[in-house]
Amino acid sequence: MTTPLYGLILAGGQSTRMGQDKAALDYAGQPQLDAAFALLAPLVERCFVSVRPDQIHDPVRARFPQIVDHLDSVGPAAGLLAAHAAHPHVAWLAVACDLPRLDRATLDTLIAARDTACQSAVAFRSTFDDLPEPLCTIWEPAALTALAASFAQGRSCPRKALIHGDTRLLPPRSGGALDNVNTPQERDAALARIGAP
Image 1 (cartoon, rainbow, N blue to C red):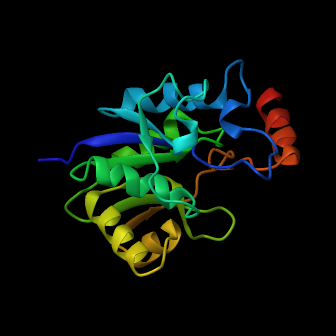
Image 2 (cartoon, one colour):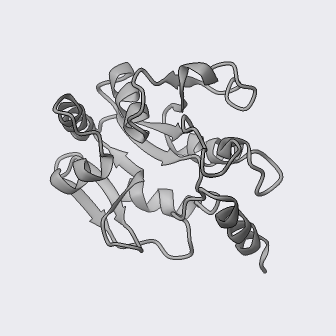
Image 3 (cartoon, rainbow, N blue to C red):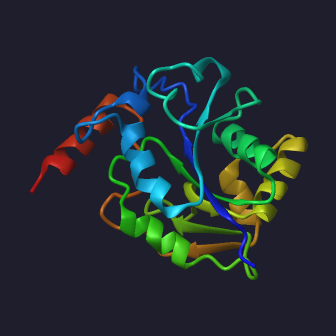
């Protein structure tokens, strides 16, 4: 029996490099969080947004089902571990909220490569360093249990958990689907690409 697959949009970051909330940025006529949720939700049994405690009532996030981070200063691991704690027996297709060029084909490729009998996670190789991309990944319960164990030992890097785990690595995605946008300059570049014919 296949483990249920839930969706998690990681939207609990501080957006310090951007200088404004990345989840609220508009790339195609709506906040990026809305676009990410609309893309992911039809592909999973349930979909949630990962938030910090002080973001629960934020207007951009309050309209969506939420999972609240219970750890501070550990980055995306906080959202992943909170999701695992809330629903420990499901797999999570986790995506960052700052991927404005993420598309259905990329997510379909991840889901099609899933094999719970053979691996604990499915991830793409980065186009930049050939290492696993942790923020567009399917995390099976075993992978998140391993991440929780690493965190208990003082390590909270999701990428390292994928490197050392039983991860199925897929070829890099072309077309910028996994390019995250962290700065105003990167946002300008993303807008230029999205607006190009």
